Image 1 (spheres, rainbow, N blue to C red):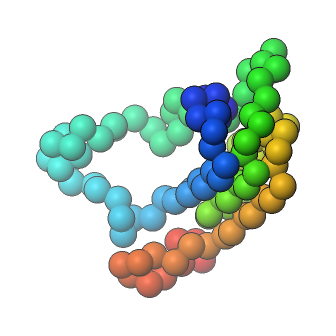
Image 2 (cartoon, rainbow, N blue to C red):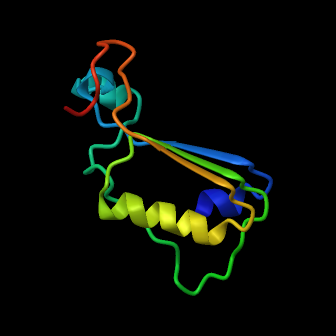
Length: 108
């Protein structure tokens, strides 16, 4: 939710959920060189908005999620955005994005 709080004039939010080895940097030296984290994926992700927050976003009208998976964290994140966004008109959820490099879908 901090993204919405930090961007009050945002009209469209696109989220890409992607975990595909073709585009991941796995070489330890490169990971260190570019400052990539070695922590577990999603270790510090706050999926739920604080329950006491009465924040409303008045400009977001479209939410797009690429790589949608029916996992509780992702569904709850989408629900939180929907509750927070007073002007939300459209929600699009796309699954299995095509990899530009290997031309395969990320999940089979």
